[in-house]
Image (cartoon, rainbow, N blue to C red; front, side, top):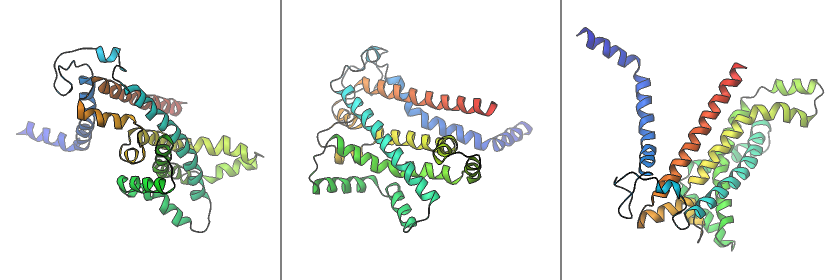
Length: 268
């Protein structure tokens, strides 16, 4: 009975940690399944049942028609939409956090509106706008739609960082005869950089992963998520698991690199 009581006390003491580990395991489990099935050799078109171990898909990740083409297109759209949303979102975040102007609260509410409304509503609205303006669906309509969708997430991340900044640091730089440009480049921008980077990474992930908004505004253009959706109806190539595993590995490496850099800065 004493041992049981001690075990119960340990479980209660570490309940939050245990719940966190179980949640993390649940989130990572699909990625583990994708990684395992990237080494599968299916007998048919569908890669849903384990048959035998093989590295054929890893040696030829572009062996399926148009797979790498759609992946390249998604990466280019994600890159350009990240640049556009980060630049515009950073400017808007500084304006909302630092300046007072008419309809400031209304502008802030409109900026955050895409985060609150369902994606299908925004996708249909953008498609209607492009149709009324006579714009052909393709690369540029996807890019504009992604920038519009990712903008609010960048503004949220950057604005939170800017509002936590101490304005006395910039005042001290000006007292030391720094020009406005020098103050921005050497004081303001380095402090706001974590928020800008976080918004950029979130924007890239959202743009690369988006399907609903892309499906409404793509026309005949096929991005990687749309390719995966179409391939799942005819058969799932193992190469899709290979690319998913590679993207997951890159994301993990980026997180680890950020953690290492943060620890080095704290030590220094």
